[in-house]
Length: 469
Image (cartoon, rainbow, N blue to C red):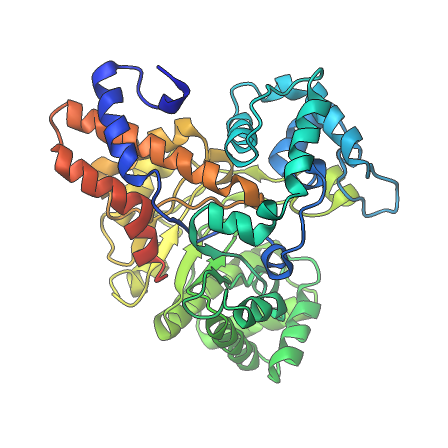
């Protein structure tokens, strides 16, 4: 085996078939329907900063691993909220990271980083404490070249569509600039995604103020529940005009709830007064998922649900550095009962597309595959966040295919903030799918021509079609 056989089966017959299948998708354009790349990167097209600022500081997969071994995030360039100093020298950060490179043995982070060094920057030197400066200097030299500006890399990565994720309170100015430059807008190469968590979740910090700002942006009276719903509809319209084809919802649970208007109004007003209990907040979130599904039926946005993360579980980390820096933890999630009200109401409506993700791998076979295999509106999202590893990608196919098939899955999403890792992550998924399909072919469970069609569907046609890109 050579490095060209990365992640392929070790069994020779299956490996040969996997090579053949992978060759069909290796150079297919990337459809990235969900992620968190800052649109300013592409709108401004400024040179990337030093290697540490690009690769280490914003990557909570990396910084949380080092924190687990006693390396404080501030020493890795993660900004502090309390005014205390944090490291800003890129070379110092990189050396500290390289000193702890052994911590990433066997992790997907190491796989992504090594492939990014090799495939994006052409760096073959193995990273370690003794080679930290050599690798840093090689990447820094590349970043100084015009060919490594964001838009040039976008072209080289062969990205056909990239979806970013914005709050309803975002003015979408970066997307307006992209549209003016011929990159954004409906049918554009970079599109936005409507993520309303900060105005839907009463437990979100500053929720009442955010609802007020939503009213100011839309001219609606968001002190009233009907005005609040009207404001959400207006912002969805603005996002669609900016190119959005989907919404995204990151809730603590997958619970949905059908409330009448008076019940919803009571919860809404209680939240604005700051009097909502945790049970009130959960009920309002559950109700709003149904309301937002109704809006998706009206305006055509594909609805994504990302439940199951206990946010800011590491309270020290949250207090020191804020959200989205590695302090979240997965929890068990109930989809069968949680989604029942929404699916009973709209699960068979062909106008709704609901893509459901999980952080609870135990639900693949028991809950998610049977649900996706039983409702026309529901699709399975790819393994996400703590689960986006080669092992789980394999287990996902093994767990869900027998019940949901391939065509109730929605293709791969990279879900990344790390722009330079996008092609690597999609390549890993394509290699894993090639290996899985190769086994089916070798076991005479699927003809080679059908496997060939399927792998192209998984890599390209399914995400493009399901997300209406």
